[in-house]
Length: 270
Image (tube, rainbow, N blue to C red; front, side):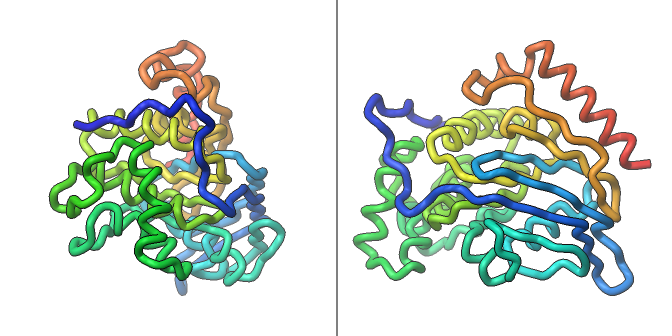
């Protein structure tokens, strides 16, 4: 399995036009006709924070990301990104990475990653020039012309993440990005993503069904109850993401917080 290359000693290049934005949810609830999915979500995410959402399957985590992204309006409550509540404005500020990589099979790796700048109006050559340094930095040098079918699962997820990054939005919404990977590749990708987020600072909301993954990757983890979802606990990550994953997740303070989060998750399922 190809792993990420080490960061260059020179100052890393960041995607132009980016920054971070605040996310504010006040009494947000959502229903699909008679089915109540989200009961009441109150959440403030400061600019630049990485927040994880964990909860039982089907509790509405993905729905919450879609609401933040402006793909739908909540049934109740107020939702603002960088102070703006209009769905079109939220969509303009958010880049959304769904669970499946959704790479276009007829495009090369670099052209899949470059789709976002192409959508902003860049020429094919300009878009590839913008994507190329990121492919090299994130361990994909030599695979620029490979089709998705020729890439491993981890490589495909890196391309999907880079496409999300190259959208140039201040908020990234990541929906279980490694759910389909085997345990070894998943652990490698967690460490890789921790490094990527350290270089490319954004406001991030990460959905995961893995408490350990969320605590390792995020500054703070919000535990949601079973449907209709409501927050039942919030815990801060006890170890910096700069630590190697194995060292971080085996630290006594990490395991203590993980057990507390798991207890809250179990309690929220009752």
